[in-house]
Amino acid sequence: MNLVALQTKTSDDFKKNLKNLKEQIQSCEDGSFILAPEVCLTGFAYDRMDEAAEFAQKAIKKLKKYSENKTIAITLIEKEDIDFFNTLYIFHNKKIVHAQSKHKLFPLGDEPAHFSKGKLENMKIIDIDGVKVATLICFEVRFPKYWLKVLGADLILNPSMWGIKRKSHFETMTKALAVANQCYVLAANSADDNMAKGSGIITPWGDEYRDDSKEKIEHEMQLSEIKKIRKYIDIGLKKK
Image (tube, rainbow, N blue to C red; front, side):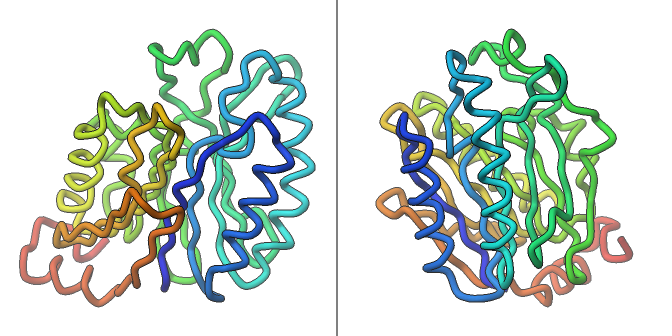
């Protein structure tokens, strides 16, 4: 499976952002698993939350179509009654196969004042065509207790909008997550000027494929590598 981490900038023009995302998705080979940066279509548009949520519903219809031969994971701002959520959707075969809203909101980004937290039980491992997939959204990767929720996954997603001042934290933790869980980590961070970039793919062996100069970073996922490391360095994951 071809893993793709997108590393794009987000403008104030929601339609332009979706157009750019569409172009990036279409440039990926069939069968790719594509992860976009956190809320890349709208940003944290605190002064345009209703507009962002309405746009997300329109984007969902298009993303279903784009996922005919690809898997797409992206977080969007959604509204339920009077509450807003930062929700990850995974699109596969023109359907939504998983949704989870960000549970651990980032205080320094003023997220708790604008979002409600998602249900912890939705932070779980799911199966997509025989691949065990789990997600930790941005700030959630800092918490060891959430690492236990995704223990045994083959692929862990980390969509982020991570600040440049903590770039080393982002890169260190996503690598450690891959090594500790003996799995692949697909990390997609924003390329906005104040963001850390550092997007890429980390293998179960800790090999990193990152490139801050690109909007798209790709690497082939080999399930055999997961089986190999779990067999020869057995920490109790090989039967999961």
